[in-house]
Amino acid sequence: MPPVSPPPEKMMFRLSLRRRGISDLRVLRAMDAIPREVFVEAADRAEAWRDTALPIACGQTISQPFVVAYMTEQLRLEATHRVLEIGTGSGYQAAVLAHLCKTVLTVERFRTLADTARARLEKLGLHNVEVMLGDGFDLPANLGAFDRIMVTAAMAEVPAALTDRLEVDGILIAPVGPHNGVQTLVQIRKTADGLERKPLVDVRFVPALPGIAREL
Ligand code: SAH
Image 1: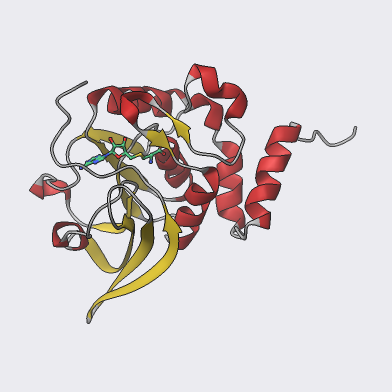
Image 2: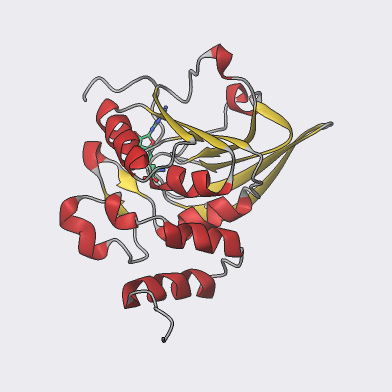
């Protein structure tokens, strides 16, 4: 029997990620395994495997697949890691992370987005992700420390309240910069001596806003 090949749009998806420099096979496999069409609006299903950001509910966006792949690769995940994501949005990035680490806690300030993402992740059988309605700038004290933190909304600066939650040897990735404009993706490593900061690439994310959203 000839091998079953994936549908052409998925082949193109994988090719475009590789062409743009994503080389971590585990990341590519995770992106292959997560059905992105489940995380976009019904009207955008046909676009789901294109390498573009798309609008989702509450005026937010699901990130471009290349950016998801790149950020995931730069996080250098291990199977034992406990990961925090700020900005659940559609839940897609959380699903990719969940494939590559032990547990994911993802926080979202819109109830509608948190509830929808939770239902999607459950339906996909990703039981190692917890979706929490909350504010990434004001997290409960009892969450403990994380091996990796990924912020997927633009922050003017990474607050110490977040880097304080990194384990030693931990890595945080966040888009840092103005709300309306280009931000720089920044990688912060916590070492025994302090924080090491490395700018990566320019990106454009929706802003991180304080407080739980009053709208649904
Ligand atoms: N990672 C998402 C895309 C993120 S869009 C995905 O894979 O689809 C950024 C998200 O961050 C939006 O849903 C926005 O509501 C949320 N957000 C913004 N500020 C926040 C905050 N302070 N705490 C938690 N979530 C926040």
